[in-house]
Structure formats: C-alpha cells, structure tokens
Length: 189
Length: 176
Image (cartoon, rainbow over all chains, first blue to last red):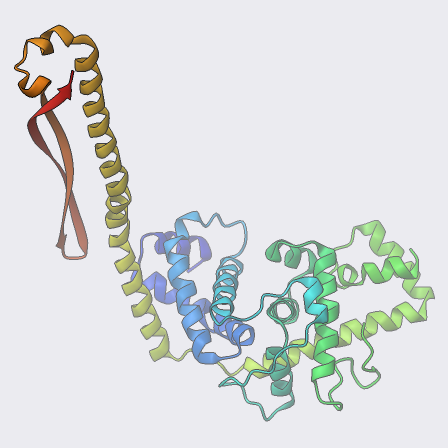
C-alpha cells in the first residue's frame, strides 16, 4: 500500500491500514525509541502511544514530510514528555556543556556485552538534548538543516550540540573504543 | 574559502547541502589543505562508526507478529475510546459557562427589577400595603436551568440538552 492510500485508509480508521502502518514503521520506530529512552519496554509503550496520537491527528497530516518523519516527530515529543515525567533535567545548550550527566542504572534489552552496546550505554548517560541530536544525526541520518527544523533551533545550535555530544561520548567510552577510527585520536572534531 | 569557513560548513559539505558554488569552493580548499582533509576524514569516520554501532546496538530489536497484532488492537481500542470523548468533553466544557451565564442572568434580572420598580413604580408601590412602614414589592422571576443527559449506545455517547424553566414569586420589603 503506498503512503497516500495508507493515509487515506488511516483517516477512515481502517483496521488493516493500522496493522500495515505498524508493520511498516513499527520496528524502525521501536529501535529509535529504544535509543532515545534506553529501555525497550518503555520504548514499546512510546511507539504504541505514537501510533495512537498519529491516528488521532492523521487528518492534519498534509504529506509535506514522509509518514515516517511525521511519526518520528510525534515519537520525539512523547519521549520528551517521558523524560520530563521521570523528573529528568531538561538541558539547554549551555547547561549541557557544563553539567555532568547522572549515571542511571536502567533495565534494558540492549546487549551490553558488545562494543556497540558500550556505545548504547554511553548514549544513555548523555543529556536528553545530546542523546536526541546524536540519534537523529547518526541513526536517523538527518541533515543539519533537517535537524534544525525538527528541533526548532538554529543550525549553529545543532552543530554545537553535536560537538559537545560527541566529546561527551568519547569521554564516556572505554579508552580502546575510538569513534574516529584507527588513525583517529580522542580529540574532538 | 578558508579553513574556518570550511570547518563551519563541514557538516553541510558532507550532507551535500551546500550550493554548487560553495561546494566547488570547499573542494578547491580541500584539495590544497591537508588539515581540513583530515578533519573531513575524521567526521566521515565518526559518522560511519556511530551509525554502524547504533544500528548494531538495536538492530535485533523488533516487534514479532504477536506484538504487532497486540499493538494494533490496543491502538484501535484507544482510538475507539477517544471517539466518545469529544462529545462528553464538548458538553462538559459548555456546562460551566452555561451555568455561570444563567446565574449572571438571574442576578441581572433581579437587579433590573429592583431598580425599575424602585425608580419608576414609586407611586404604584406606595399604594401597596406597607406594614411596619415598609413598602412591599412583589417579584415574579422565571429562569431556565440547562440539564445534560448522556446515554451510551454501543461505542457512542448520545447527549441531550434540556432547559427547565423555573418560576419564583416572592415579596420584597423595602424601607421607606
């Protein structure tokens, strides 16, 4: 089913369309949500709520962005509420550069035995704003101007957040894990 | 383009979102600047490294068919539930304004009667019995009270608005 037909069917609350929507975008949203919130169980709830919110407001979807981009923006809003509800600090750009993230032990389905999982664990220790910008840039592959639009900040702020987020990631990762490759150093970009 | 300008636009260069002339200028600078070439290599390496590791970290997470069906059912149930809500919310939103308006109207009517009778019906009031040196003013007041009833039929909530007219009569004693 193409996206236009799918959206039309969703407006009619068609059950098959809802299942198709979940089948098409559920896994990718779930993975992104897991990276954003660090917990697969909560991520699944966030994804389900994303679909509920999407169906409630599907009549407002104009097709200016892709359906996935729209769903992901709903997911991000819900994730922010999730973090707020957990009484986590909301960072701004300046504070994020100064604050030391609090280590939080959280149950997770992520496999912490692998190098990739070391990275995922470090990701969970970043501030919400820094984690968000890294996930959007390096998992969702958003361009700088898309990030600026999606996050509602300037391109300069996006680059600044990326800079500090990468620096913090490098600090949190084990010494033998270099994000810049064998020729790289632990210096920032 | 100098080093500073290139570093500022490094992300956009890698995103291929520079204008044609900016891109050409960046490439000219890169061809002659090993320091900026190294900066670009590092950022490219970082992007590849982070992307692949993030993908590995969550790549196996997926909704199986049971979870998908369960989610679809839960979503449908929540949506169906939210379909009733606007009807109820619509009337519940109106209830307080209506009630407030009714009270204000009643007070306004009462005050209006009071003033009109007090200012314009002096001679008429004077003719009314005046026990204990008071004038007696008869007040006849009617007002409507909105009432809301809801009944559920299947997944639908049917609402009905009724207005009950209440009449009140009374005597008001006024000092001379």
